[in-house]
Length: 130
Image (cartoon, one colour):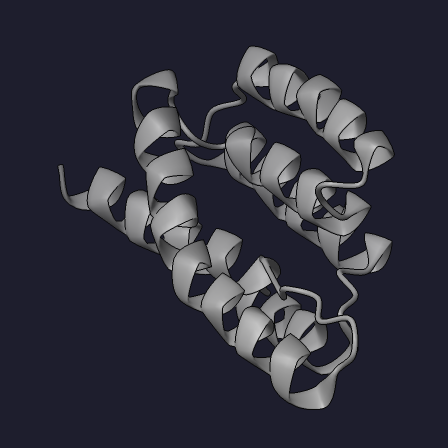
């Protein structure tokens, strides 16, 4: 699902609600049937801060929804690692957007769903093998 999120964000600059809901349902199923967990506090804090940042114009709503849903499944001790990786993966994306903006003389947006997805894949993979 996260690969589809990346494709959609790069191609159309949209992280659809449908994809976020499917991820949410997968996390819920994992919680109820498997070893998953629900970190409601982390997700809620992210959602509240994200809504504020969205209304200021700093981030997209799809990015915030995606991060909040993914945080549901991460233990608290991995949240800062997740955020750090998102920032590190976001740097090259931001540089590409800056170059595009200067070359094309248009507004360039950052497909941050890629950084979010890559960070989550690495962090959740790390958690599995820890």
